[in-house]
Length: 547
Ligand code: GLN
Image (cartoon, rainbow, N blue to C red; front, side, top):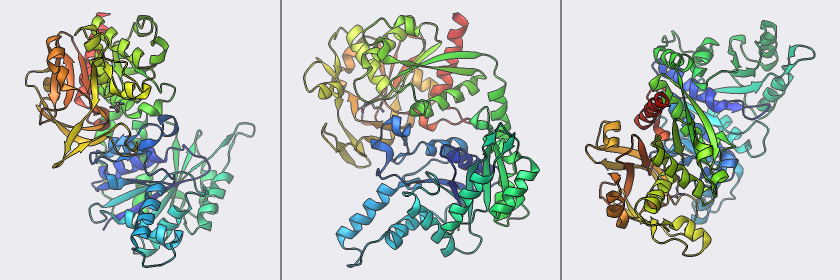
């Protein structure tokens, strides 16, 4: 039966709860335990799939097709445990399940209330897979005191009460602000936030305190005394140069030991941190750098492309170089020459995206990379852009375009339409999409197999001809144009196993130009960089030697 660690936050948001949870997961693994990490989000969207990246950052997709919070990406990158549908839940999902049950009559005429019906539903969610791992880490989104979060806090309180004593602990993240005028770290906000927790029946076992300055012994004692935790359980979280230092930094501050002590696990198995020392070394001792342009739409907000930025960092680690990412807004050259914006980069990446805005600029970026022989990685929409560019500028289909944008404009602007809504096979049934379907959860989502052409660049990069990657899109290349595009030199080097859906395209007479319909970035880890990103950065390093 799993032991549960509930992770909550107080004082302010954005303290790095997700990172702390992920790092703690990694440390428990380093001590030989198995872990699973979960996120409970108080917002009312059923999942983040319909939220704009401006609102919520990237949507992280799991193998089993759930659209989840980007914190699940951190969890996977630190623990290597593939997240599942059952590792992410929101108030919206909980309420919609409760309301479905009510409509079905499952509650036998009872009045439906937050306590116990909503809280019971949350507790049921928490219990899923409780026999599978040693530790279940459950992070509650938001900050203690938020109205929306209350049912979750009440549910975890009850949950710990239902379980055997010592089977659940609470870890709370807070902030110690620094007052420059008096040169002091202030503990009062932490005290208040712990009081808030206590008022709803939760007494934290561990406090993780974010601080820009070392926490003096005196302050630590004060926090321990006023917040009713042991002094060793007041753990400092200082700012880090790289998130991948977090496991080592938290270990140094005694977080994993404090957790094992709170569960009374003794003697504690010694940690093996060799992997994280190697990660640290690769991050801090690069032997050069490359400059990569990400040509996208949400460039003001790095969280929108979180996993891509991380996967590029991992690709850099594989090659022992630092990858300097520059965000280039595609709209800047929608109607202008792209060259002045794209010169000087060692590689160009066009990421996923939705909607027409900026697409003409992205198509120009693909053209620039093809003509100048600069390494290009097109992800999802980035592959769509590469295919349209190939059709227009190489295969002689000057007005080629995509149904995605025609649909938005409500007319027939493109001829031919090389990207379409399609059907696909999921398990043993066929799924089809229409343009006016519901927006939530209706894309081609999750892991699908692709067969790669032996001898192609991608088969070489993966070292295999069968791969499995995660998808999140509606539109696909129309295979009607495969022959035309292939005779122009764009090889369809990866296909769905039934041969109906193009998964990968590559230019044959180019040093490194690959478009993929899926999201390889979601599976990359610092200790296991994704082969596409590792090889893309390798090609960028080669490019940097030429210029
Ligand atoms: N908008 C495109 C589609 O739905 C691409 C999606 C993406 O890049 N993830 O097919």
